[in-house]
Length: 189
Ligand SMILES: CC(C)(COP(=O)(O)OP(=O)(O)OC[C@H]1O[C@@H](n2cnc3c(N)ncnc32)[C@H](O)[C@@H]1OP(=O)(O)O)[C@@H](O)C(=O)NCCC(=O)NCCS
Image (cartoon, rainbow, N blue to C red):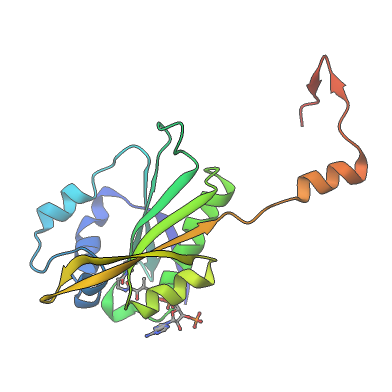
């Protein structure tokens, strides 16, 4: 089963609308039942700092993830928020969420210089919490009565993940000696 991850395209909006309209997805997120395709289209419009990924399986868009970054906020640009991750209800439990998380974490760690990832998850969403823990997220706090769902209030955990320390470069510099400065600058690689 080959799952590929790519950025959202304009023509994906109906498939993403279908994903975001699933019963389990509404249960696990802030989505409302009977939401319109137009609302979803507006929701998906490109916005600076927002990275929207889809998971594709056998030509069908079956998952969606959104990472929010703050490139224009100097004191917050090291932070990213996983704003939404959702897999089409009939496709859950097949590793699609895991693939999307891999892509989000790789982007954050290896390309966007994000050192802290945060997210909110309903305290009873065991599947999502299990998935996030696999990627190093820990519960940092709980907000009571954060959202209204099916007639009752639900608490939300704030989960966070610090980028793992990568000392490889420093180690290799120690092993082979610091690079020779040229005119006061380190040599270009
Ligand atoms: C949460 C969600 C994104 C996970 O995606 P998925 O494709 O179903 O998850 P995966 O198949 O990648 O499985 C991830 C892990 O969760 C585990 N899992 C699945 N159902 C579980 C359950 N009921 N309880 C505990 N763990 C569960 C899987 O076994 C897997 O763990 P493993 O690798 O140790 O076996 C998906 O279920 C979803 O869209 N839920 C509705 C929307 C939602 O709640 N989003 C999160 C908002 S914070």
